[in-house]
Image 1: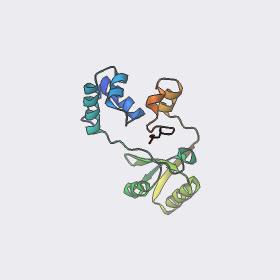
Image 2: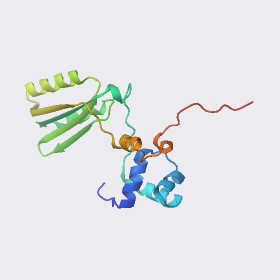
Image 3: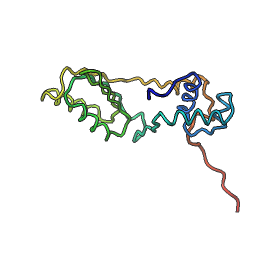
Image 4: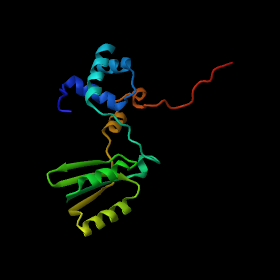
Length: 166
């Protein structure tokens, strides 16, 4: 949102919330080197302006391929409606007459065939495509380099719970 003032403190808070949205305010304050009340207030400011969603990849993200498609069309709403039903995270970016699609899919061949048919029928024009094979996740890289402590990296606890004794 353009109404949010992105100060260095807000960016740092947003970074740690991106690492683990379920992090407690006490842990967030410890990482930000501030009080829990300040961490809470910063988080509430961010929550007013930012939409948080958890990407869901059926079968795990490794089973998806990332495609980039760029084309011109008079029907951008059609592609937005189609991608709403996709099980992976996808983005539609419209710049002038050009549409850029970033699609995570388990069926790249079928998607590419459909796009070819749309081009043949004139629904889209001047299509360019690229299949991405190597993914770079900045949070994963920070974790591997030791910048994110392991206890904050995992959103859901791993391992078994201790059972209550009766």
